[in-house]
Picture 1 (cartoon, rainbow, N blue to C red):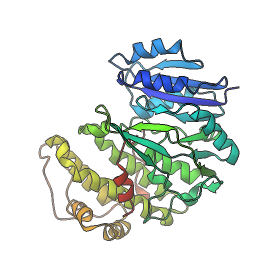
Picture 2 (tube, rainbow, N blue to C red):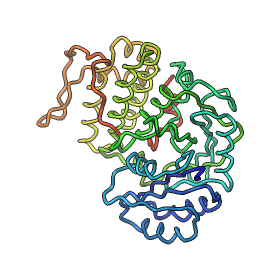
Picture 3 (cartoon, rainbow, N blue to C red):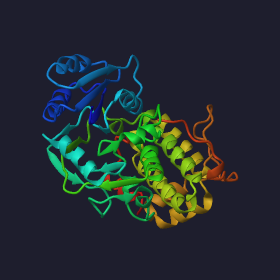
Length: 363
């Protein structure tokens, strides 16, 4: 029986494939499998993966005929996985030797639905330890209770799918798949759903072995094109699903506050977008703000610092751009649409928002 399935999507990361495969080789175990998903790469990634199969026991290669994005590639891996437990690694990151055996031991010790772990963020030669924003470690906890408080960073502000291990029962319950089609922030609806609907989780104590490359040129967070705007669809889905939760009154302030922080982050870096994309960003953010529950939004803005709240307040009554006039705006607000009435957005890492974003989500 396969104990652990490691799902690794790759897309045009030829310069990192050898390091990633070597790290997997340093974690081989007879009851581990490695599901490598090539998301229709156009560089040398497919060739390198094919060559690497011979030296990696337990590896299988799955190919996409068309690029589907990180969420879709992870879902392909989930569908192919046979393990009792599942975990993820991005194709440009790596593991420390022996890390995966320690990861399995961590979840078996606490016997929870999932376990979250700290990671090492690597920016060039600089290394920083990024910790799960939760104080209690090494003990089973109720997953829903880790969502709050609204005013502090919590486990839902640490959405990295690869920073954890997940029991197969989450797959069977329909909780582990990602919303297909989202090009960024696909793990935000995912982590919120995990914490709302799973039963138990834990934070590993003293486990450090996953290395995340930050600032990679091909990462979507480094590219200011229209794909970045998928964070709006992602958070629209979070708001819509939280609004239907039995404890919506408790959780909506947290979800809205986080959404506002991420909007402010992107508005603060608007110069990196092409002009047409920047106009679309403003228009879509304005529409999203009007569709939030306005009393909750007002409280969230009052709690934010002046710089970020000012960015958002300037957009609140902006009309969505028309095809023939992308800069149109109005000061006359339409009636707000209650979040509970909204349709769930189209479905689909965060590759990512900086540590500041996680802090900003609650500041």
